[in-house]
Image (cartoon, rainbow, N blue to C red; front, top):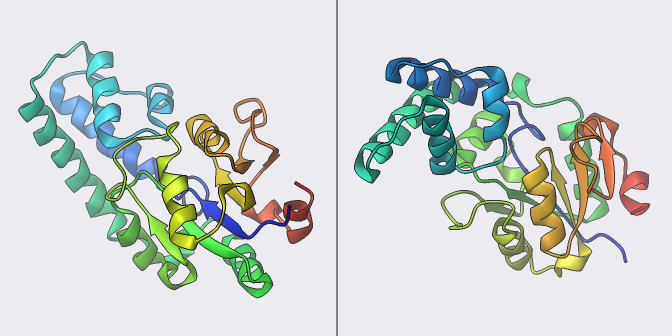
Length: 215
């Protein structure tokens, strides 16, 4: 069946904001009195902010009430936003703009499907907002990946059947979400991690319309 829509995760697919998330979480852990390593940070990939905080606190052996956890999550987000507000279009990952333009020319719809509540801010900073026909971010969903909600809502907004959609994801939970939603999935990154995807490529610089058609 011909692909009629492509849905993209944001972090690690279109732009690399993972470094900013890591710095913000590391600073929070330091304030709480423990070290948060890059290896620890791998566990946070593709999960929501509050789930990320729960993992961080588990690593530190810390138990807090919900009110305090919300305060810490807000503090982390303020630190993170201070970084992303300085982002420039030069931080768009290689091949992204060319591939999105090729999809547009082919008449294929484009949507964002991201857990990030800061997705609009990032897209605005990168001057990419107008390329998307639908934007589903963390403010529009209640269930984190691997739940397929974010992608299914994207398909609904585009008016396209899930079976005619292809998702681009760099996290295992995202790949599982796409497949659970009845969509094809192209993994961005390591075949060892993203082996469940229908196809795995290094990045959007490695994508072509022919590869999309081959699914």
